Image (cartoon, rainbow, N blue to C red; front, top):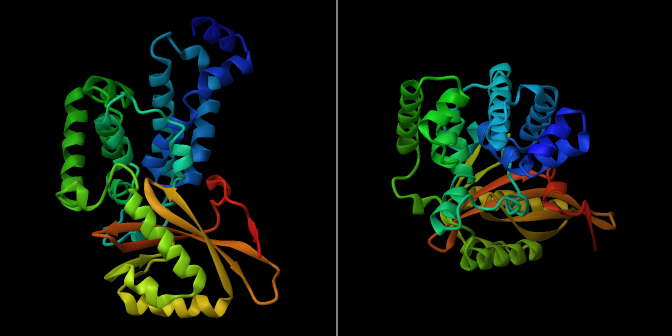
Length: 320
């Protein structure tokens, strides 16, 4: 790596791309956790890598990955400071209107930091929407410390150094951040997260997809809880109960014919919906639903628009 760094410092863009390319996805996921937005993470990572290229002469030969994380984290903190977002009280995802999903196919590009199940479970748990939404409640510095320490497994001194804090200040921020998470997330993490979508969850989503495509609301109703929650970021509303779901189903039926494709996002089962309106010849990308499953039924549907279909490797249209 020393020769590659030397070449990059001499202006070799290909060498720099080789140095940073192996870290780009994990940096993107890190920025996504910090910001809650796939798109904003993409912008910030690009800015961070540009800053790294311009400041490569300042790299002192230490840990290159840690150096990139410092630049990316500071870029996130700058982006948060420049935004005018209010801190959500978090009664629902609807209070975090900027939150976006993350395709599992891109998460799978990152190898777990250690070849052991616990490391993998933590990595998956901390990409779920529930965790991400609560992170957005934390002051930026607390958020950064908690991610560095509890998600990435950095030592206290490493996190403090990256953020230009004393170890005592970093530990204090970490404790406050952990306290907020304990207050806002279920006591038993199994209530809200799992290592990966189970086959039972995926089977449930396949049945939902089939019922969805057939306009079979009776079957759909049997697959969801009576108190099912439906949120549609960035809309500031949360709909609770089968009555609301039925109303949305009637509206959807009037819009045209539907087709759906099962996918995974944020380590949750999901499905992408395509709509063929009357008079159209193809099904067009319409929405993405993430499904939280509790006790064998859908407990929450989080609906996003079609903006990120390309990131999921999904086509813009389906033939009839």
